[in-house]
Length: 280
Image (cartoon, rainbow, N blue to C red; front, side):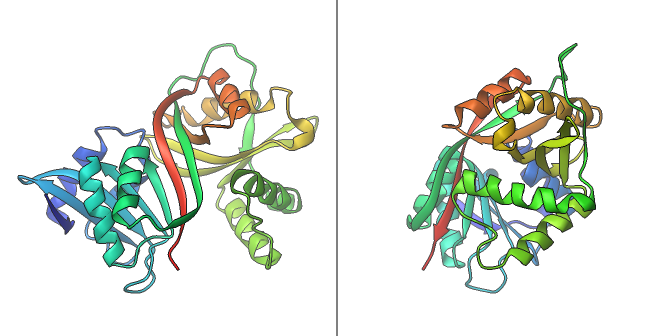
């Protein structure tokens, strides 16, 4: 097995490997199509070859300077080859966050030398390809700038519930600025019940191939009313008009959320690993 940085001549092989499971690899496929190889500034692509066949691939994003951690590393492919990709990543400074199929990610983590991981979650990718027929739903819409004061605390609470960290701690204005920017970019979508925002979510990758959604949140006082299920049906109705699938990640121990998504026609697809790494 041989690890090397990918170049323009590897684009076809990279897309062939990633498209062997497009639902799992929506993020990488979208980036590769928008940023042709090689992408030296923001994205680094490395691959492992066996007899000139690409068997594993990793995307490292936002390494701000040489020998420093990338902000995110996403592996895919043969687990043993992913360990080699981890060793290559470690030599370049490692990564602060790891996200990808569980086995590939765990082997890349082994190649990194198994640094401390304050966040280490088992997640599952869920996929919806069908809108459903005659099922009750909530209409979704892009959030508006005047709703910042409502949505910023909701986004903070969602993160605290999800990963246990408070994004407002130390610099609340920076968090407000980030949420305001997401609203301007139409990355945050909402649904209302009784003229109140009862559901919010973020839209990530968006292309004809598929849409990734996340940061899904229902305020605590509105839970246990089927709002998440009805809102996700609304998500499907809107986005499946222009994309082949909608995908989301959910922690495997979040049983209420899983049940809500299943009722909205989401089907479990791939086990994922989400990890935040401490490289000090």
